[in-house]
Image (cartoon, rainbow, N blue to C red; front, side):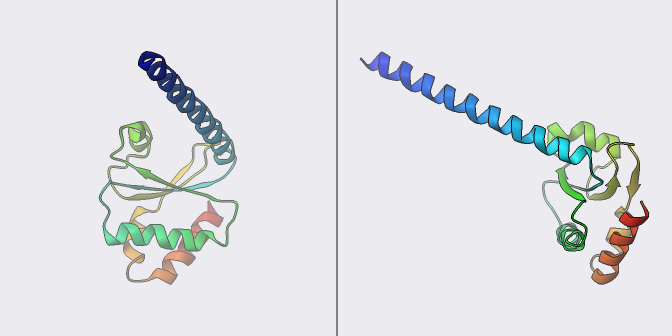
Length: 135
């Protein structure tokens, strides 16, 4: 009787896992389709983030409230699954890029972000919007 219950429990957990995993893959596939058709703002960062890195993310999100067609992504460069993408952008820590997945065109805004996010947040937001429009 115990063996049957154990077997039934293992099968139930396995089915639940594969069902959830399939739904997650479908969701990721839908996100990828949306992201492939849009300009992206990508912020790379390490696992442990500084105040400026967090501020860059916050201000970027605020600026993008006006631009609903831009996809904003944050990527943890320390995560092995992101290694290839981080290498493609040459990001080893905090970095900010505008990216067109259709053409592969990139614009590095890292220096601009660090120079303005903390001391001039309004200039950062306006400059980010202008850079996206000009991209």
